[in-house]
Length: 101
Picture 1: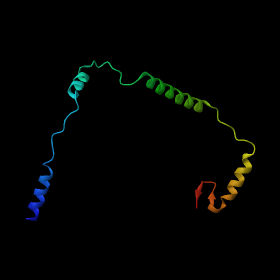
Picture 2: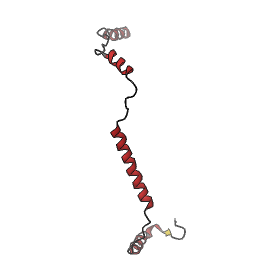
Picture 3: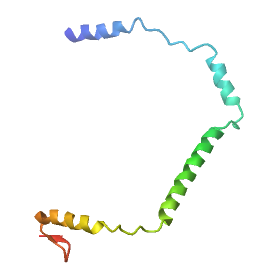
Picture 4: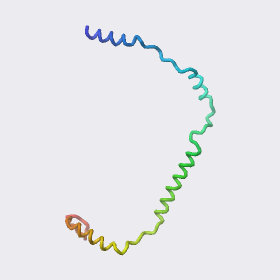
């Protein structure tokens, strides 16, 4: 009996429902879009220009980085390298085979 009353309660909650109404002239607008020629642009020309400019700048930056000659180390790097290796003595680095043991 408890289940039937719950079922009746659920069914009664549906009594106040009515069919949804479409906005006015919806069908007319849909037909107008379907009948439009497909020649409309999907992408604006300014978007294509910005994308092309961005791609060109990225390509130019990559070419400049790849064509740059390798830089030689400065004269003060040996001191910093020695200090760096002295600080890493805790790791017991085998410098001949570059393995930690």
